[in-house]
Image (cartoon, rainbow, N blue to C red; front, side, top):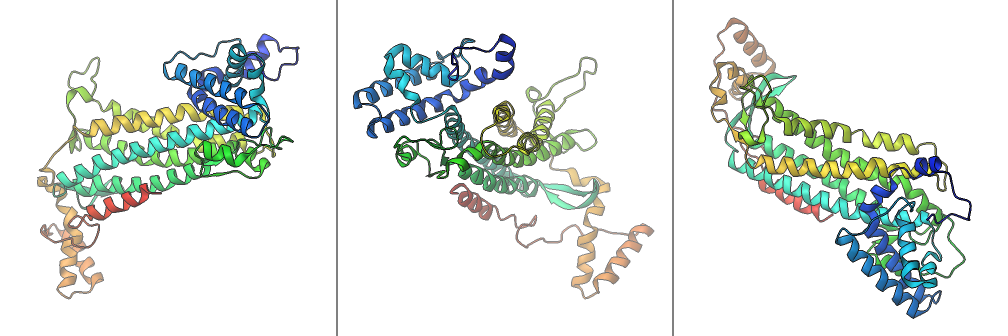
Length: 428
């Protein structure tokens, strides 16, 4: 069944090419299409476009369909183009002519828009919750290991003293920036496009404010052309926020992989969180974090893919936009799985407490030693030159007990302030 079929169906090759992955992907969206159809039926009844009895029948049938989705019994067979055609077919099968009235005053264009935006609102909220979970895990680790020393690096060269507390809380606070972007993406999605129909509204006296409230949108997308122009834009905005989370997570995964190598040996995980080699019995590979790194690197390319797909499209609907689902929906699942694995694995991370006993890390303290000279009254540039000469001559003796007291330093992590900032960010 195709909602646009006027009696002359497409051939099999055309059908296969144009439908693409819609049937599979729509199973992720169908609960939201049913939710929107329910609100639409209620609005049609109140606007007098269908009778109250017809509205009640449609709502009851849609509620039953929603239960089938929850139970995993809802399917979209090859006879149907997408979830829209399947839902309308089932309504007509159960209600006769009343089922055929559900499409009054709407189009598949605003149907998919509203379903997609309801889906993205829910998924963005869920991702934000997972980010909060990772944040809390990192902050707990920062508190537990705040005084455990760790070498700091620039250019992958030994640089200055750091700590596990500083490292863990650095990624925790970075996640707050990602929450800001998730909030922004949710705001873009939180505008009701239902009623824009094919992008130019309709002559039916519909009540778009009513469906906006019924569906829990913050506001509606007033201009019907602007509503349709949101297709592609809402996906790009969401992808940008997801890419930001992925960038933070991918960088952290790279640190994990580096610090687990025998050359560093700063951290380790239990055997059940690592993998081995088919020929090297000593191997404990960080496959979980390597895959997180790889998946997150691919996720960072998602906004560019969506920009390339949509960049030269005029206003109004184009079939190209169907492809946004094939890019975005699997990416949502990938990011969620990466967040889940990172958070659960970190519960079992083990850190080394004696790293800085190795003499090669004495140079971490060159800046602190230099600063001691400055505090004693020596001009900075003279102290810098003197320190360089001592290092070159092999007479350098590090000062290892210098205090770092300013906000955000190894001696003053400001963990409570970081927690308060995240609390505020989560409020939107």
